[in-house]
Image (cartoon, rainbow over all chains, first blue to last red; front, top):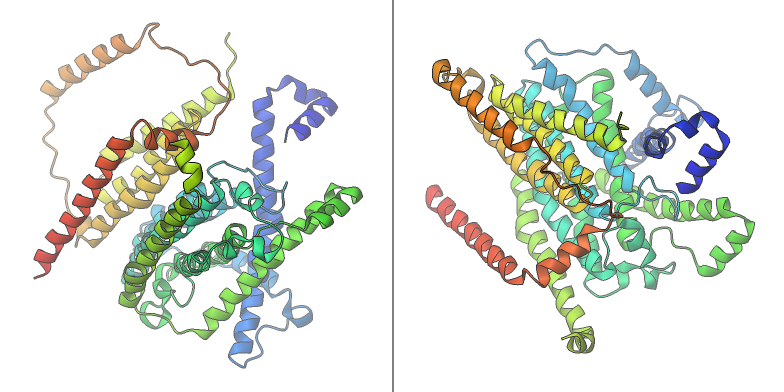
Length: 368
Length: 168
């Protein structure tokens, strides 16, 4: 960042009159928008097409295959169609809140992408509270969903919004406990530091660091599926009960915002699991030194590909799960969270703390 | 003329968001609007914490107040039946008494806060607050920390006991 600022100030005379703070602020905004435009938006679009194709395969259908080769441009056609559609606001709806809700959902999801790493250098901001920030800022999404449910003035929307909020708030606890185990292991909340504490090879990943970590990984995975309203936990928009939940009354681009959030969240779930448990962008040191001789661009590209491929494997598992498993009931969902995942989370994080004390007892005695 | 820094602009914007939303909470006719205005207020306070370079407290503010307390408040509002029909009954505003009290309070606050009494902290480089908080909690304030956790545990068990009786 400092390099870019000094370069800009050195090469553009008009910028020299501005204070450096403004340049930093502008650069941060530009970096955030670049992540949104170059990565999140195309990803959410393309994954919507991929998911429909996989769903079609699972159901023995053909799926969208008309626009472009194999229907690959279907998402662009859908986007244009949604832009051209009328923006309908129901007469009985609370129009201010109805308009505001999609923005809140979008902002909450997009703000989380600030700390999602792409390579060792490509990250909007490597906050030193990274993963904690991510958990905190996604709670704005919950407020947006509740707002949309209330503002639609529709009993199905209200029920969907409240189910979703209850689900997200509940599952934050097992997710937090699993993340706690990783944080104890790495000694840092910053996502880049957590990745650096791991290695390139599977036995260096946090997933296989100790016997409790695979349990933490699976419990985090289940909890983040539930937080992302993905099947088998998509009861907020269970179409057989609630039409389509909190997004029932929405149309056009406002509707797309909700689905955009869902598909962006898909990548977020995958990226968090990859960064915390699957070694992130780490490459073998031989590859790193080879790539550095060819230039930094190649290194970051390789790191990005490593991260992206791992994340995509997770994304495909999540999509396959969606079209394989049936939906759980509300009481089953809550029972799974409070009776199984939360105790398991406590056992994992406490067990790992005790094990950590056991392994470090000699160091501890020397400190005391 | 003193140079306006980015920090000052950010402070003014955040203070306006916080106070404006707080006004929304207090003066909204519909209680659901009050609930949603609270979001802006809590968010603004989190921003002020970031301005004071305490990122951990800011994220905690978001997590606890937006993710927890605000959601609970919204749940309570949404689960109350016919919440929209409730007329605002608190219209008996006693101006004759209120205006002198407000004026006196305002004079007192302005006189006590104006003047050169504010100490401005030295410009120290940004430090991670997480490790500082962690060390402080487990070294100097270990006993209060443990006592608080026991109090919270008692509150949790107590709430479960109360809830169980009501179901029967």
